Image (cartoon, rainbow, N blue to C red; front, side, top):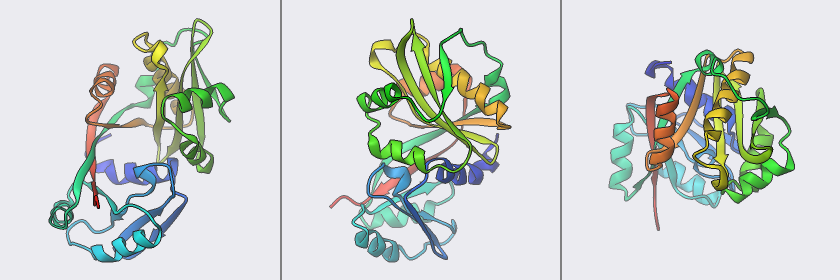
Length: 241
């Protein structure tokens, strides 16, 4: 996958990690969610070259009692500068990592190590909760309408990891990948991603994509070692009152 496919990636984010509601205007796509994080609450511009009506978005987000939050993608320099002038700060610069689903699926997974399961088991929910993935994010998984599954990872018959993955536009998007702190640095993350690749390839996906904040150096190093490549990036602009 190359940079020219990034429009499909952002559409896939919305389909595999959807907001409670979407409001599509001429110049904007707004996401309404009380909880669940930035991906389901940020506004995005439809037109990259001009500066759309920012005040309209600010008023709508205020009505929804949401933060004034915008996602800035490649090529949106004018919007980025306009928000900066209005006092918005950069938040969570994020890398977009990708790898061929077929290539990832060819890697051997040790027996009884990673399983594709949906709906998620109670123990997976416990792993997510213990590692910062709260109920509002699990509700997002329930909203997804495209093919989806969760991956459950075990080490020595003990629950160790959980991830959510869904497919759209021939892209398998991974969300909420966590390895419990007791089992980190034991290869569990690699086995989960290998299982993601196997499931994604069976679903007809061409690529597996993961979003990772740039400040998470250990995770970025992991994806690099796994053989993934950065194919794009984005960041948010947030107005802090």
